[in-house]
Image 1 (cartoon, rainbow, N blue to C red):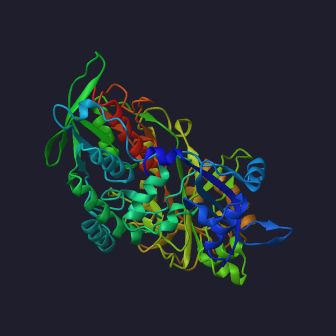
Image 2: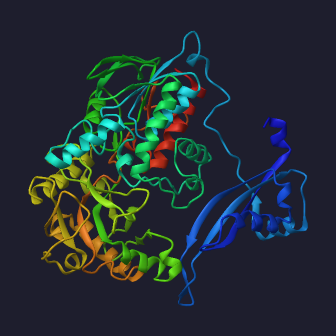
Image 3: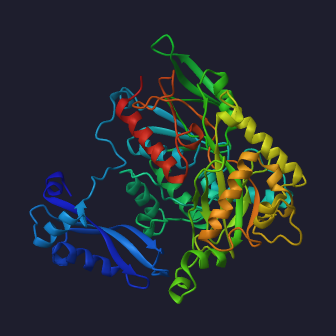
Length: 554
């Protein structure tokens, strides 16, 4: 469709369309057309943009239904009484403009007199999307990751589970796809960004289900990500991207920048030798502690930022299903239920909330260094596990862990080492029933869990900082009112969850996205302090790549 054709069309967004559980999605199109008074045959385009389950109680009863938003593409000249009424009531509105993973302007320094070579560090969502956008604009890209491609990475993780000896370079945190590959694979975000749909379409083109384009709880699943990533890699290779797996970045080759207080990166120092480059997109993930320190020693600015600390809580999935959806036949047809719970601050305790909820999932040891324990959650696309788990976290900042750019890292390490030792120093995880946590006693009897490396009874209420203990106690009592049994004997706390987000930020310019004091270093994603999940990291990588393309090299 050319520009003139686009100008002759208008996209109207119809919001709040009711769809009963069990009704086919085809009815959304019919109801959306009726709401604006248009014959379906006159549509120039149609798509569902959001579908969310409404399970709220009304008058003591729960009426399950989906609330759907849909876009109708019509001739710009179309008018009707129904459209006028819907616009006035707010049931219809103009759809926001959509952006693309392309830019109309590529700076001449990237194309003349030779193609620029950009090094992208990290193959998580931030690095992958940055590399994809750059390669689509005929920029030479080398993607560097200390971990392995997904095929080899999977085998290395099996070896860890058998030997309990982590591979410091390729693990649940480092390798193709980043930490999100072995997390829940959730790709929804609270940020309304015009690049979100184009990114989701890329994933669909690589094998993701189409419902991720509109499902309010869009989820890919670890199993499906293992099939999607090689397809995306092949597409990028066809665009000329070079992949340097099992290559650890150990430093930067620097030159003086155009101003007295600026520097320019001329090459990466890696375990496989120097990699010359004209710019670096730095997307190392939230656990690249050693790389942060090396960069800081070379003058790259870092600052402490707040991060979330907590534990995993696990329940039999049926408890969550009953609490969130009820026990009706309709509810049972919806599969594994999820939750998103918040307990506000009070009684001297900070706010606490659930994060990375994994319906039908399992708890994993998300570690890369010997001697430290950190847990996370993951689930496959089928949500087939009988357990549901989520992080319960509170926010800690410099006030709690002290000044200095890496004080948060030291704070994480201290707690992770404590839990590792209490667990027996073999990645067995300390655990405590929710009811025992509230009562202040050690749990007895068998502790059933999805965590494959085993659990040991421990006083988690004494292992975590008092501020977190108090926040979790208030949260458990609050969440039990929403989901009966949440804080009972069936709830199991497993710890520690210390890497829901990173504790550092690399200051960067708001417009150019360049690191402070550098002309060609672009910090991206969770490891740079600018994202908090798969989609937000991917968006940050794409936006930074577009900024680099438009502004060029200094």
